[in-house]
Amino acid sequence: MLGLCVLLAGTLGLEAGAFRTVVIDPGHGAGDLGGHYGKVYEKHLALDTSMRLEHYLEASGYRTVMTRRSDVFISLPKRASIGNSHSNSIFVSVHYNYTWKRDVSGLETFYNNSRSKPLAQYVQAEMLKRVRCVNRGVKYARYYVIRNAKNPAILVECGFVSNRRERNRMKKAGYRDDMARGIAEGIAKYQLARRSGRVR
Ligand SMILES: [Zn+2]
Image 1 (cartoon, helix red, strand yellow):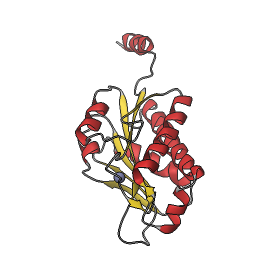
Image 2 (spheres, helix red, strand yellow):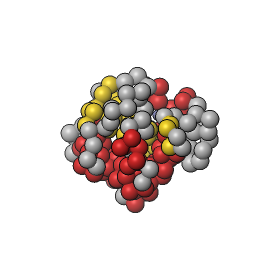
Image 3 (cartoon, protein in one colour):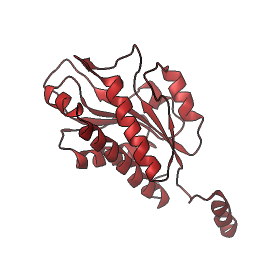
């Protein structure tokens, strides 16, 4: 049986445990601005960061799928169904945060089930290596796109639009690029863990 399994894995061109596709979901779009302050809109920050993430993942050999590539409205069920239509994939929803408490800042990553938690942990850790930010941690949440995902799925919050210091940072391309690199590096570490069988 072992011989057959090795043969099948070879035929697929993919090691056991590995995934091939990353579905990238830039939050919000069109009339749904997301968090905003002045002319700084979450929907724009999320799309820009997502396209940078797409670039880094493709450079690493992943297949990528974007739920949107322009300023359009995509419903939450549609986003989830795009994710679920790709087998052997993971789902990463990219957002920027907002709260009425102006002094709150930092990065956080959400998951909805135990299978997705390691992905959230790797991505959160690698983002924090790229930028000096408050670590708000990895948390369980019931957001639609991660709750309705069949594959490992996370929702990443790349800083608070409502916090003046973070808002000034996220306006710069370099910060959004650091976020994208951090997320891509977290995905790479998660892939290694999947390949080695440490997570499934
Ligand atoms: Zn959002």
